[in-house]
Image 1 (spheres, rainbow, N blue to C red):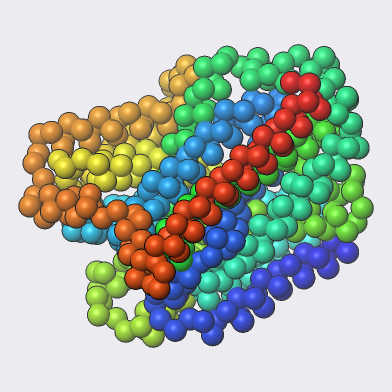
Image 2: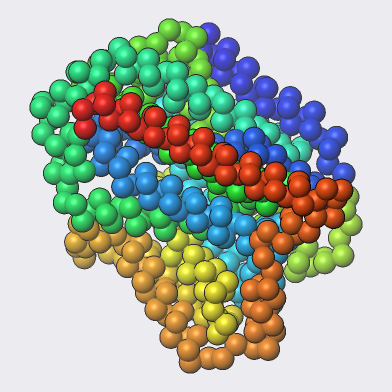
Length: 530
């Protein structure tokens, strides 16, 4: 049954993508699905991207061993804050500037070849490194559990991803992400509660007596509060500017869709995380000796639920892998086709040729990803550690300063990106080889963020921006994220009434989500006696 569900799920994604191909009429459809994304679709893709295999495997294992509050408390809350910044602040602003990819912003703001090239290289390295290591890790675990050779799993994943990414571009990614979102919902709100019921809330509470600190921010490792605070800051920085989250706003139908996504999607993502972390704690009661820790939730699926739910659980795990990997495919492919080839070599490429280039570039990415994943090079692990964080140390200070500071210029942007990314790698390698020891409450990401930001400020103060850079800044400040949506609604019949209805709908949704949040947290607080 498990193998059947594995195959059916992969096939369903490909079928949906094939059906969506007929919607691709031009490059705008391929890159941002014609900006027709509804609230459900954008919520689905955002939450699916947010919940990667890191949540279901890595952090679930930490919650199992040390307690769910260690990272589920301030760490998960930091991820929530970072995602809110990515969607409501950065994503909305870039969308209002009509960006189809994040690279469009660098081009528009600076009109500088070197800024665009460095930003592009960092994005490709970051996406490839972060995506490949997740594919390798999850593929190894699945190969062990479902008794299918590792290369076969990687090839199956790659072919399925290539099909729904290249056939229908962003349409395929967002629709399949939403399908994946529902399988992840099943894990969070069906399988996780069943595991908690099997363990019993009384027994879960008693873990605090058996393992000192299990239900505290210190955890069983008795980490200092400063460490938890540092994790909060790290997750804020990590999520606030990652292209995987920011770019999910670009296909939205209107600014009101973005606001509803910020309310609904950013409720579901951390709520689903919390349920997974608590289910991992339930597994500590059910089976306290699982090794390696990454297998905690898979053991829960395979050994403590019925075969049908086990299949659903593995489908959700596959979804967490594929939603992240599809982001890798589509954004890297877009970067090679649109941000590299079109802008540097053929600015007048036709609509048809642009779509073909997008598909061809994704095929190239697929071949590279598949080959590297199957080879499982040891070095890729260390690359992946730095890859995802590059956006926090190099892009985040650059983009925020570009949006808010008149003196921001291309030289400051280049300096920040280079200092931030290089210092992160250097400090990380020195730490890995025990040449330097950082305090437990100081992360290398925080150090590099400070260094990158300081270098940006110094260069921006010393060097004046060009007339073009000043003008682009003034244009950005003048463009309000809600302006196009408001103008579009007011141009319709009974526009004022429609606008009022939209605003009222957002506030009603906020009230509903607050009520749901209060109910869920209160119930768990009462049951676990925290």
